[in-house]
Image 1: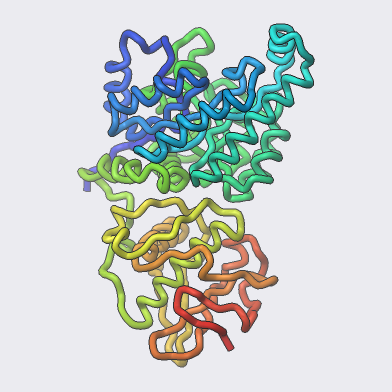
Image 2: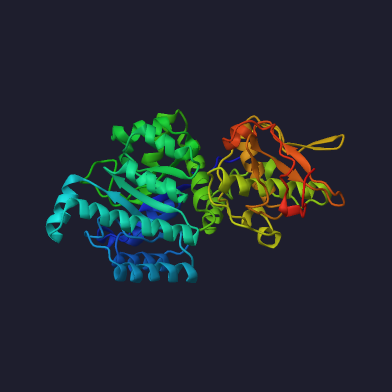
Length: 452
């Protein structure tokens, strides 16, 4: 079997920069040649939004736009009229063709930045901070309204930035995070925030410390092109050099570059899949000549009927409920016609650390819905993707009792929903034990008014 081609996703860069004015086509071609299947280009100012959208038109299969106002792009100014115009641009594009996310947004409380902006505006540094916070909060709210991730900048304001994100409940990525590693771990544990790192990871120890502490499920790759190159601040960076970041990440985590590419690409699809379904197609297409990203045991199968179909829908509902209710990534409501095959399904769910078995007790019969695998975590992760394609996904279908999550399955023709028990549910969703049971919980997905 041929080895899988490396597929990278550059989750944060600025190809709209003037530094790419004369060789943009060559830059994009090099990126594609080096295995980059998705480039998330962030805007930094109102005029830059138009430039990013033009790039999308020129390279629609590779570029995914994140639209927003960088804290430095504000210039210390953010009023209602300015925001109304910017907001209308973003909302209009989202309605027309969709956007990948809101970004680059965030906070930058670097002393020199605050001092310079305050001097330019004839105001205080405290006012500049307040302006940045107002702009950040407005854009985070817009991301929540549109149901897209945020692409976030934070410098000398990591805790303030994360507090706003925690309160909002949005999902997204922290780009080039160089704050306290413990703070990053706290954010990653919410299941909503991932962390991307550029080629400068090769020499920046503060990045390396964060990468070392975080689990791979919380990590992404980026370039921040044209900045943050492996060769230092004087070197121009570009998406095609993302492999340097992957190689260093692999060294730190004790993995191969291939493994880092696979995991981070899967993470990117998980984060951006709902807002950018084409990313999944690109990632899969890159491996069409080699090893499929989805294990054979967990590839698409025909929709099941009877209790199996109900079980599949229950798993899909739990993924959706768990994502919203326990701090995972946003999960949209989808119906079978939109999920004709796994290849057509976006992957916005969080990574769950499932054990090797998911079992459903129906009377005296115990059915096992996932197959054992040497790589149990990977197999179960993709098995959930397989099950997601089987039926309706409803974020409200499942509730969580105080002790842990419980899935309810109501086989057709039976008046009472039965319990889906999962031995590792507490660990997987971070809510405690899996054996707690609340008989009043019921599954709206199956029309059960009450579970006795």
